[in-house]
Image (cartoon, rainbow, N blue to C red; front, top):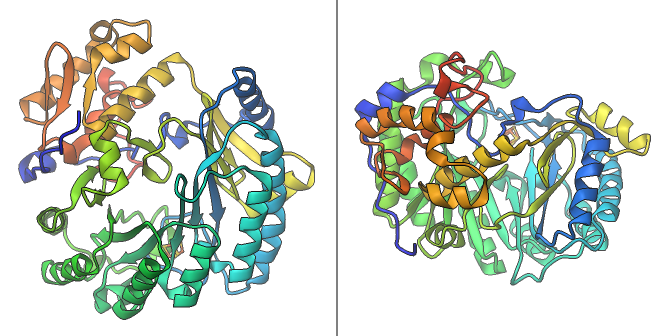
Length: 470
Ligand code: SF4
């Protein structure tokens, strides 16, 4: 397949009918299924089994920097807000120790083709600290060339100067992602994230001049004080700024789970009906401006690698969202970071104290995880294909697994028939194909295949711990 996808179609009636909470499927099984009896030993076994199989799959590295200077009220991330930057120096000492251990474990097993720095705020680190950390990573892992590898960093434009952007490029990053959320001053005030438009534009210009290959910006719809008029203005500014990729997230107001959100006045939030209108307007404006809707909150220019990978059926989903590197082993370092190695997921300790304590005792700080069984592996591929390609060849799944698709997933296919009646997908002898109308509801479609939710078998209540699917 090498043709562009038809544009997404917005059907408020069906969206309203199917709106519910559900996972984002950055992994399958989802992180809430990880088990506490999975630890360092199981992680070592997974790496040893890769080594025995002489796996030469590319490697991907994720580095988590948890610190932020100030709190954004909408935040649902795992972060530590502090102005005491000495905490970062302590953290870096331990992080480097973890990198040493992972570097030794994966020695000779392949090149790093993808690196991502996330947080928190990675640019909370000083220029010198970042330079040292990158040198340390290069001393422990073999990196693909700048032309071949994707080396990205999330930045908070409030924390970087034009000089810092140049320095990040010189330190080896070639992709940059900027948190913007909204350009409207009233919205920025309501979420405690004052970020003048000129500052953001200056950082983007500097990134282009410095030779970053891709610039991405993050937006959020559903924030307090957002209106159709304010969002329309923000969109004009976004389109004028001309990023290569745009992530447009749905604000999930869950103050009972995320404490900072209690500082958002509920009366300032757009109603669910307005939120849907905001989303419809964003999709239309961005598609009119020439962006391709990749899926699950992401837009990219047609010539961007993400859009090309999708046209060629190579797109993947991992903890950072969509990715162009098929089947890479993901090694994650830092507090709370999640690795995906072989048929396992493993998560690091979630508090600094626990993370430091494990490293001090000489073990990797794995706290929980899961070893996937054959059913998990099968469903993971089905969900991945639907999320990334919006279609699934049933016979291609039968080639990879010893099953008869229609028998194995008889109950799931029955459930999908209801979605077909709503015009969200079609099912023929070979393909399950998601229609332009179904693309916005891809999470609902994938949830049918999630054994742990048991939706196909009507054995589980609606999963309320997740955010709304749309
Ligand atoms: S949204 Fe980002 S910058 Fe703001 S508090 Fe959360 S992690 Fe920090």
